[in-house]
Length: 161
Length: 330
Image 1 (cartoon, rainbow over the protein chains, first blue to last red):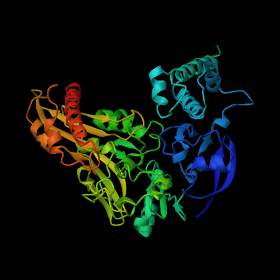
Image 2: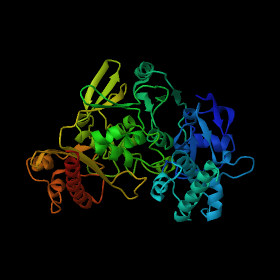
Image 3: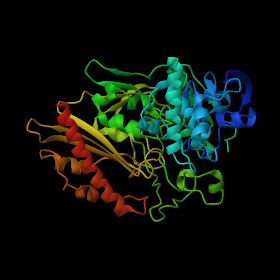
């Protein structure tokens, strides 16, 4: 039976009528038109559907929409502020860490969450944090470079350098 | 495709959840992290009319030391908290390692210990999309009349692949379960049926609430080793946990070794354990050949000799590493 729920997505509240079997990914893409989170494997293995739930990366394809009610949901569309890219996004562009772009929203959100928990990660920590996000074309070296660059810049900004 | 007419419930307390389960019985599935239930729902094989979400129940999410030195872990604790807990690592390194290798990094923040214990069995014929299944005959696990993987045997041979149960077995852990008749305790060793269709001996109206690891003995160490095609996101081809207690001379006083990914249940390698007892810690020449002989038939895999040999090698290596951990903690 369908339910009326409220989802908080990128700082906005949305009242929605949702079937219990619909995933958060279904609702984001099909009901809210937020197509940044991608439909990849559908099994939580590829990470293309990654969103942040209360700041932590989660697979939207394995999260029922009803389960996400009451949590703060951030998708890639919610990252840029006032037209300015988030430092992680900027670093991905500058280092060429994007090729087809299908995995990029998930990579960026996982990286953002990592840098909030751990502002100065070792490359090994970056690899571990992104191990649930699969890229099939760029390779991982530039992605790890991008996260390191973003970390340096965010630390610099935080310390006022 | 979503299942039609699914009812979702989000009880606020365990008692309320138990009442719902009692009312819905086997027509209800428990939803914890959802990393096993949601794929089954999406591929049309969940076969339930009710989902009882555990997300609003605030209890059973802690890791705490009990009065007798036992470690009590709430069943709704996410695997990443278990993997990163210093208390779990001190108490049973195998459990921290298994929790840190289970599912994928992305899912470990949601997947719970109780959910991992209660994971359904898997099979390459059963775990397919609805579209794939539409063009083929149903198997036993999907409600058909035959197993299409092992047609001669014709019982369900789906594999149990969860990673924390073997670690809990070597720690001698038990689970506290609540149901309509009250609470009961089940040793993790006795929780599994080895039936691919119904792998758990938990009743449909019961909820696993707490996992209890007894205080580990002195000079005891443990580890978990996993073999998988892809390191971060695969179910194990094989997973082995070992727990070893050394005596004062550094010989093996007691050993427990348990395997996952080989049958419809996790299981102890009791013959190997008894061979190890009282002996020296095996060196690199020990290749676990008796393990390969003792683990019985493996029905699902068509590369059985390879998997048997690997089970022996992994078991021997796990014992060496657990013994090393035991020395370091002595």
